[in-house]
Length: 473
Image 1 (cartoon, rainbow, N blue to C red):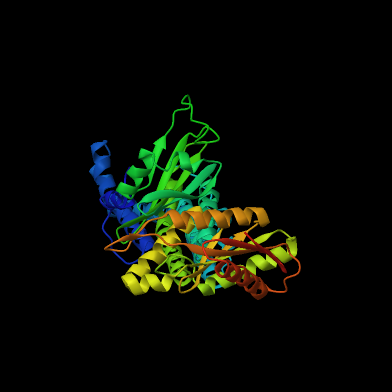
Image 2: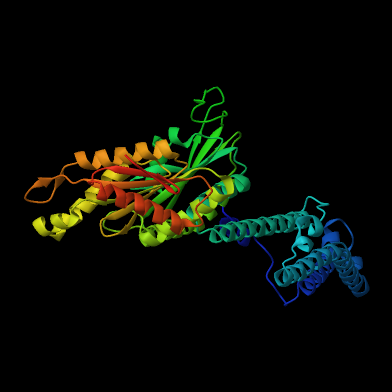
């Protein structure tokens, strides 16, 4: 494809008459009048060849007549050319001035409706240089409109990304914007976590089936948009895609030499070059937004997680308990709460040192987290004391979970350096059904009572409580 700069260079190489003045029409008048004078000078001598006697053709009056006739013809030609060409040139320049004014207005007001190609285009009514000038002017308008539309799309997409710092909201916004702007029929957003790709958002496509595909790996390595053309007679696994795409694009996200993830887009038709260029324009803002959201997520986690045990800290845990308590009050769904601490933890510190005590805390936290469901929350409330928030757990389920936790901890060996030990925990539990308790603090007080009952009755056991009713295991 010929580039605009090469076309311009070729145009500049075209032969043209030298400039005589600073005005084109004056040049045209001089050249045409001069040409008429030359014809007037040459004509008397030319007709001698045709048989006209020199005595007639070279008579001063005849000679002056031919000069005057040549001059008049040149001036008439100039007048006709200016009348025919000048009007069309004035129309072109008038359109240019209108477009300039419309651009200034749009820049000030944000209203670009006056500068659309439909409002400003010129009629192409000839197949000559003037017609070509009109076509070039219309192409310029279309390019300007396309450039503005692309800029507006980039600005809109960037604004929508910056409005979402929460990671889940951002990845869904990214996918929605990419699909809407590019006309994709399906898509997914994959993010690099701990060295592997995870599906964070998807539409009409099973991202789990393609996250390890060679297409993804190639796109992440090259950092460029990777396209795969799919033949119409090739059947696509319905597990991976819920329709038959003609083309799939992978748009990788990189920042500071680090792969952040990629957006997968599937299309029912072929993707135009303009769409690909638009997606390329989205890449920088997508990468920055993803990086910011991931950083925000990590900071939130650092602020919420106890660094030693990787359980949630007391502040976060109490806020989460308040949220679940309010939900239970509205829905009367059960809410379970377990509290446990490590039996004779002080003896561990005294016998093996505080580093061994830290290992015990980490080991117990890891073992308990492995026993919990996805929605359960482990909270370190202080020292060797923990609370487990179990939304939706009734009395029997909570008691079963408490006993499983107690048993797992008891059977988990812990390397404390010079020895391998086991520890036990005492557990208290309370189930709440949206009545009786006045606030989360009362729930905590009740579960502490149950925990105290476990410790008082011999430790390494589970004591369950319904509100206002303690039941020993």
